[in-house]
Image (cartoon, rainbow, N blue to C red; front, side):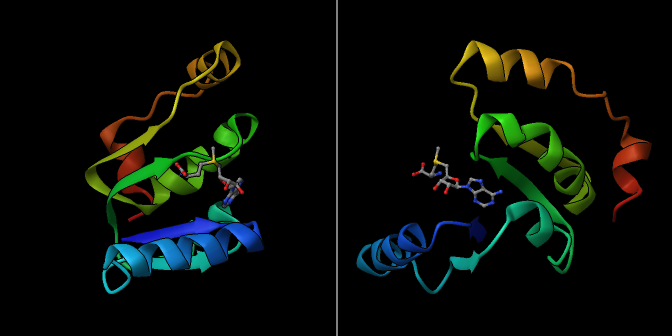
Length: 102
Ligand SMILES: C[S@@+](CC[C@H](N)C(=O)[O-])C[C@H]1O[C@@H](n2cnc3c(N)ncnc32)[C@H](O)[C@@H]1O
């Protein structure tokens, strides 16, 4: 599993937490923007889960879709009316469109 975090103190906390939980060998934490980071991931992903600033979801959608394998899934948290409405304005993607990034 690969995860991205832009905030340095949270990166440190996450590294500590992964170690304490004994999952640091299976979780790779990359410091930096998830949108840019997704374009650097080698190999198609089965799942991209987005939990960033809600106002950033649409920007992150394209790199998320490009990182997915055909049949893969992108999900995100929906915790406010604003995020629900911004996500619902996202363009629909056909399986053909999804394959363009893999
Ligand atoms: C709502 S918190 C969720 C954190 C984590 N998923 C959790 O459940 O504890 C959002 C996190 O995304 C980080 N973040 C915001 N924009 C980001 C981006 N473009 N790339 C990577 N991380 C980002 C923030 O620093 C923050 O730690």
